[in-house]
Amino acid sequence: MSFYKLEMAVFMTVNTLSVIAESSRPWAMKMILDNANSRNMTSTYWYLGLLGVATIGGNLINSLTQFCGDRIIIPLSRQVKQTVFKKILDLDFAFHVDKNTGSLISAFRRSDNAIFSIFSYVFSN
Image 1: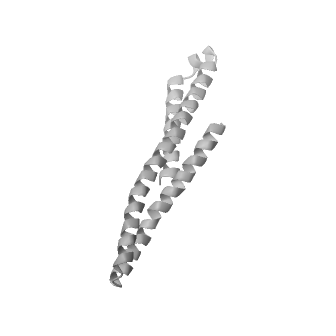
Image 2 (image 1 turned 120 degrees about the vertical axis):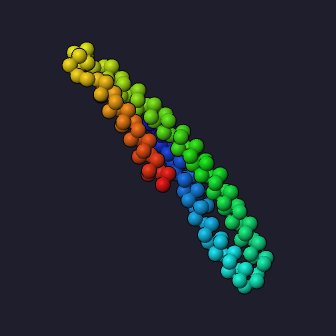
Image 3 (image 1 turned 45 degrees about the horizontal axis):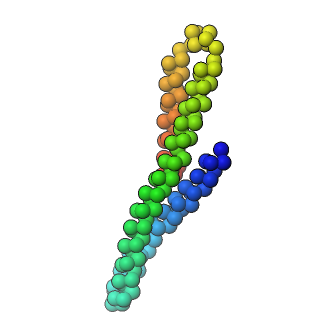
């Protein structure tokens, strides 16, 4: 379980850097406009370069964030599936005869989709 803690810490750090890089773009645009209005072209070009670096860097860090998220969610999903199906297979035969385990497996598949949805909504939006 410590694997997920370390990966989650890396993911949150990269995600924070992505938000910072993306949030600096409006400020750089404001500085470009302010310096262009005051005819300070040296600062205007400097902030224009900063805007380009922030845009490209933000996109690269955003891609790295997606990669780090996939490194967490895919093994976690596999572990959840293995645990659930092991639990189903450990049930006695009488349970399988009396109950509809196909619908039970379908419910577990929906829970797997829920894990992906929660991770997506919490960390990607």
